[in-house]
Length: 243
View 1 (cartoon, rainbow, N blue to C red):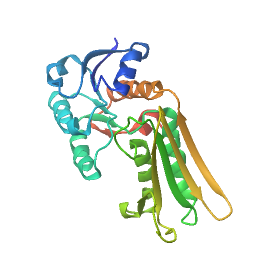
View 2: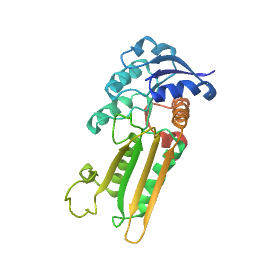
View 3: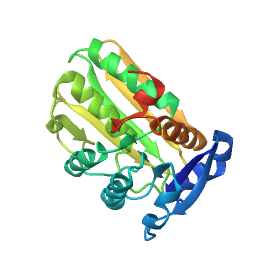
View 4: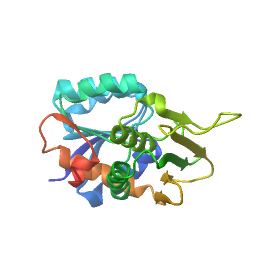
């Protein structure tokens, strides 16, 4: 039997991509809602919720999922760190996959970045760049934020180590700095580069997406996986067995 999905954010780019390939992934969209709609009217007829909408509705959607004991996949980005920390507590009450990127390649990039940050010490300066289409509303991207979190975790640094761009006489780069740079333009689906620059050499890890379908397929794959999991918060590393 096909997996029944309540798709929130159905009018967005990711929502349309998921709806377009659900059938090939053994899934069916039983309800397609967007910001301003009431998903509570359709919650009973689904097996899993997939949300790619707005950070302003995540809390209410998690409460709805919890009340009806429905697994949920969250791909919405743009949450403030403090707000996300509170939302994760609500998410843990149901099976929840929360990820900033559902691409298999990007999740391998996460694993490689963790390994590189662990092996390369403070002598290697860490910088992140990401580029997306001109219509993207939040910056940095959820994927770039996750890459940043990985580097901060491995180097045991706080958020005060992050430098969003540079302008003027900023002085020499501090060894603990982690640079973050967001570019916007054209129709770029998503490019991410992690750079570790040492004296005499540098390592660059890059992923470039050319088709939004890779994220949509990953989201539906996560929906199939989370439907069989106990309550708790997971990410695509769990879905893909990369941990």
